[in-house]
Length: 242
Image 1 (spheres, rainbow, N blue to C red):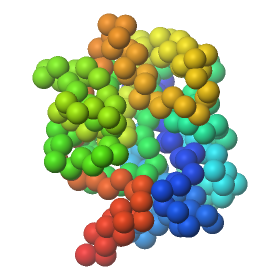
Image 2 (cartoon, rainbow, N blue to C red; image 1 turned 135 degrees about the vertical axis):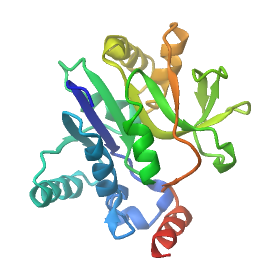
Image 3 (cartoon, rainbow, N blue to C red; image 1 turned 120 degrees about the vertical axis):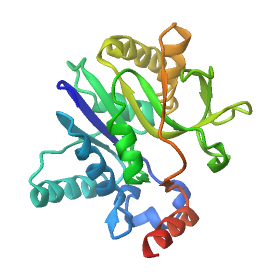
Image 4 (cartoon, rainbow, N blue to C red; image 1 turned 90 degrees about the vertical axis):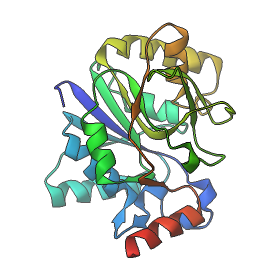
């Protein structure tokens, strides 16, 4: 991975759809396959070797902060944890150092990915884009749906799209040449809406509307688990048990 690149792990959410499971334990610290979701995310990112790793945290912040401290001690790492606001766009914005205009790799903390997907990400970090799968049979009502131009570029992204040909997998890159415009877009969104409202994916719709290219980076068939509900947690855990 080229220098002057940071990685951000979004881990601030409340995990409301998991119900009582997240009353005492924040979702990123739930265990899947004998490892917390946060550690799955950290190991994934560290394989890519960015210059700096930042975990954005809010709900039960102290527990997440302690988990990062312990991870650093055990693994001899220097992962940073930042207290941010709720809402994925605000979490992303708050985690960005104010004077940083390099490249960014960002991923959600509530996914577990296969080694194949790690390699697909590691080998396709250049330029601004969203990592997606064209295996739309894996989609549910709640996934972020993506419409492409048929040539690997994004046209639009929304959970309510009915005409789409890919699904987003919670990982994106922003190239250094787009960072100034991305910061403008974030400020514009916060001037229009409360900070908890906009999703981070709005960045890409706005880039496209301004004539910038957003690549759709194919990670292949579905080899991941997204953990949003008790059933999804059970399915992932059963997979690892087998």
